[in-house]
Image 1 (tube, rainbow, N blue to C red):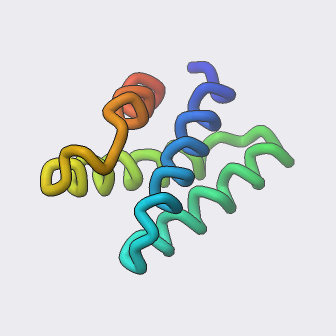
Image 2: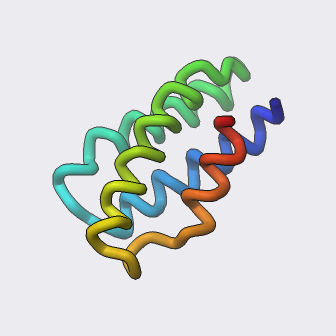
Length: 83
């Protein structure tokens, strides 16, 4: 498990939520950003894994309703790194 790649996938997901600019995603975006900062400090990926999975589910659900608004690569990277 390459934790740097998990971190980068989570960062891309946080940026995707920021671009969507929806109040419903403010919480998950801020939790991802917090976990990224925490990981950068202590190199413990548990929060990234936990909220990365939540982000993956949210992005998949959003993409199913809005196919052009979320880059498929972000979802694929999260899936690959969290599997």
